Length: 209
Image (cartoon, rainbow, N blue to C red; front, side):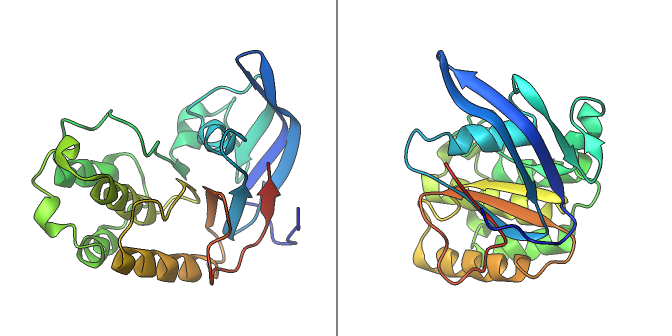
């Protein structure tokens, strides 16, 4: 792991988690600085599980997580407002229209950026899909909805699982541009989980699983 001297957005210490009797993580510790970082590993290595743990969606068996000093254990709700993460396979929002889901973000994230969302909806060509329920969208269109949400939420920490999966060429190019801009952000952190590093995006740290 290549460290960066910037003050970390996320501090992880002694993280432990087991699944099905197998220890996935044991005393895992790292800091995530502002910019873009990567969790890299093959199928079954625990990439998606790690993002879920960092989001507070699953409970670790040991360790501490803090975003700018806000600890998950001590200030659970406040911590969750500091991080954006969504399971790309989730069916939790299937009954909602895509536009209704995106409109709901402002209630959950204090730094939500409506102007940014409008730009992302145009950039990802989501306009024709906003009135459709999520279950009617293709995998690629659902992914674009989650990405628009991720970049508009304005959270200090954004977690994105396999960001380029199922995207068309124009959307992949837009996402790469967004990540290149994110890589230079002085205060916010993006942590990606994928099999390989995104082309053309400078990374602050890489966590190998």
